[in-house]
Length: 114
Length: 112
Image 1 (cartoon, each protein chain N blue to C red):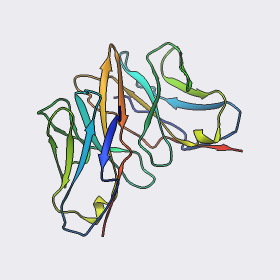
Image 2 (image 1 turned 180 degrees about the horizontal axis):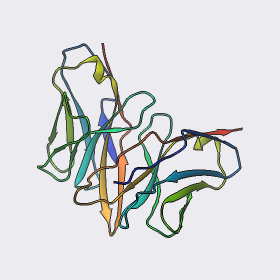
Image 3 (image 1 turned 90 degrees about the vertical axis):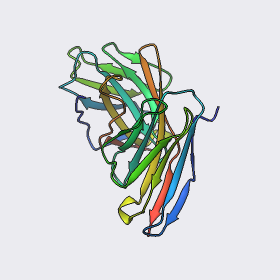
Image 4 (image 1 turned 30 degrees about the horizontal axis):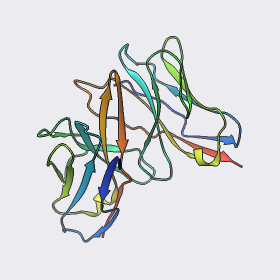
């Protein structure tokens, strides 16, 4: 049981390049999320997916697109990377047992845009 | 979701109890208090949650005041590995709230 797996762990991009961050969970959770964390800051929600086939914008969606490929996988795409997108990106999933909902996070993708 | 207020930083001696406060004076009746922590830029980790009763698990205890306007996370015997940023989050999962919203948290430094 790996939980939430993100790939890659590190990435350096040049301004204007594109890339896709991959996320997969093996907990059969309906909801998945993408956050970014800038140095010294809390996590900010980029996009989330409440269930397979649905996606919604979070607090900071500009410059990103997402795809909920299936129940397990939720990818984040940067079409034209900018230095302002240098950040650590976290994927998460959440599941509910009774009245208790818990979110699990991946270990992050550290992205530098030069 | 109710806003939370936490001190930006705290120190604690190793082996002593760490008491991390959180103010959530605008909490509504169906909102839970969740605590997560983030160790050295790893992904946040769930610690504990509660509605109105005090809760305890293998990691920590959560004390919620009777009026639910504030809470305290207690790490009973802090170790160096508990050095982390601790986030207090108030929310009710479900329609209208689909994700955790993180503030700045409290940076806890456990001193040897």
